[in-house]
Image (tube, rainbow, N blue to C red; front, side, top):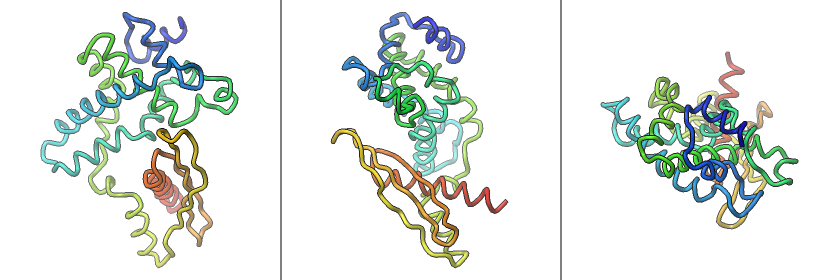
Length: 227
């Protein structure tokens, strides 16, 4: 744990009073029953509150709907996993042998859950102020580069409108995989544009969210190709 603790102090500028909380936050359920699922639950709630305050202050004239979308864009699994990967969190995860072999340290859901678990662990370790400081530090650059309201619109709708404006057929969404236990399902969906044979995929806790992710990736892809 010394290496993980050094990483934490260097990247998040935090040291735990109770090192067991940090170890639990890094532990995936594939490794042991003493894992980070409960801490993730707590961290998710703390994260929502902190980010809600941040976007409220950053956009004083934004209506409630835009604030909700801004918050969602920051705390969705895809964004959290990206932040966790940038921080190097995956190198310090405690995984079962199966997850290790399958590259679990790079899996989006595992990274996102572990980052939320760390936030929850900090909250238990030193209270809300400490958790807020850590979260604000992680999200500092994201707060500065908050997207415009137009970019926050439903990605499936945006993709559909983009295709219709070019007289192309609507995207095709296909459910390709459902995994996990009943209370922790993961849905994987592909999004295909027939005319270009472009395919993207999205994975999340519901089919709708997975489709949204796949559509968002497709928007990014077609924008890159059109530049």
